[in-house]
Amino acid sequence: MNLLFSTILICSLLNGALADSFNFEHIGESPENSDVSTSEEVGYSIKFTNNWTQENHPFRYPTFDPHWSRFVYASHSSAYVMWQDGGRATKGIENVAEFGSIFALQGAIRGQQNAGNVLDDVVGNGIGTASQGATSIPGEHLCVDASHPYVSGISMIAPSPDWFTGVYNLPLSDVSTMTWFRKIEVYVYAWDAGTEEGDDYRL
Figure (cartoon, one colour):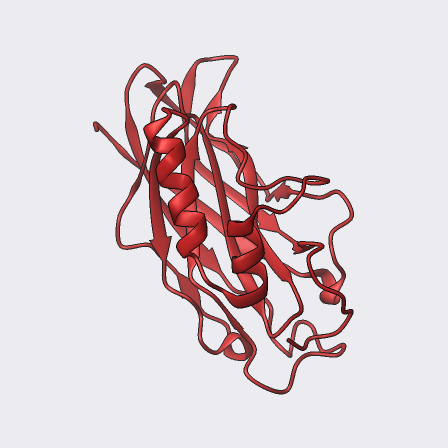
């Protein structure tokens, strides 16, 4: 690994509305380019900033224990899909969305690593008191290379029946210049895993 970059994911739940087709939305001048070729393996730090607070999203905000589960991120090729719009939730995604449990998802990621479709994965701490705003930063950097230029990630929105936030297939390189982005800043949205019934913040 030759260089360290920064990928910043910022959560915005749009007053609690679930996403229709949004995956992520770039903020401002993001992404910032670099002159580092994608032929080099690099590492990214990831920072999730919680904007889902009662002040920002007062409509039907949960009064009991609003929080995020631990965050799971993976760098991968186009052959791996952690989750996507319109896709069927795997057992790993179902367990994260319903219970905040990451173990089945981690097992699936290990299998994809053995198959060569996933390069690296990291886990970020959960956010125990979402109402006050906070950040989650994994203790390790996520490695990417030319064969694995995408990042996907997920965390449970709690309490909820099966809602989560995250990003899927976020490209970390500029294909026109074959260089890595130095910094990416995006908004991410709320999603329904489709595994439980419910339209309110309750388990």
